[in-house]
Length: 269
Image (tube, rainbow, N blue to C red):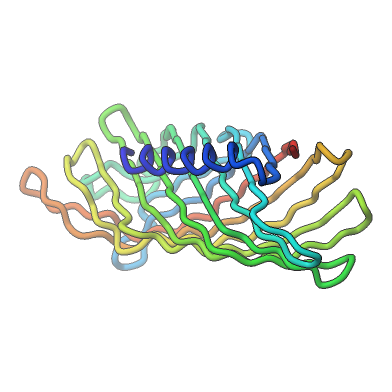
């Protein structure tokens, strides 16, 4: 979590430097976010051993963003984009007691979750014509997931990531714009810490492929409203073995399909 705090601090420094630069046009956005989760872990034979599931109303929170116009000409402009996402809520756990050897489904409970995701990116936008434009860029991010299965079993997943992104925008009319984008998040030094084991698990990988669609409505020159939907496929590969109490433990392979629905407003100044 300390790495995440440092990363957030770096983002805030960048924000402050640009806010007082004076030459940049700034967009500040706020959105309410709902998240659904479909997370599954598999043993080395590919057998499902536990899962987490939720609906959009079970996990919720907010996202704030600051975008800064860095340069602009007739058909091209570049922005520095930053965002911080925070979500909290419960998932339904189905699995078994750790180390019991009991089958999947022998334990059903509720897991408390906290998710923090930060991003800073350089994004270039180019107009094709008056209706179409496309964008591309590269970002850096940090992800934190706290998974409290019980008071004595809390797992924390953390990693940095490199995030290339491409997108397409279509102007329906002067007020309404539709957009779609694809982003790949390559995890760097992904780890998982479990309080009941007392060790750090070095994950084989932690990558995310995200697909998003959105609609933006321009109320006037200063205010926009927007709706976004994002589907993420998160893939985590098996970790190293950590020995605790004479028993070896490892974090297994997992796949998660996370969906996000965002409803927000943006202020331009």
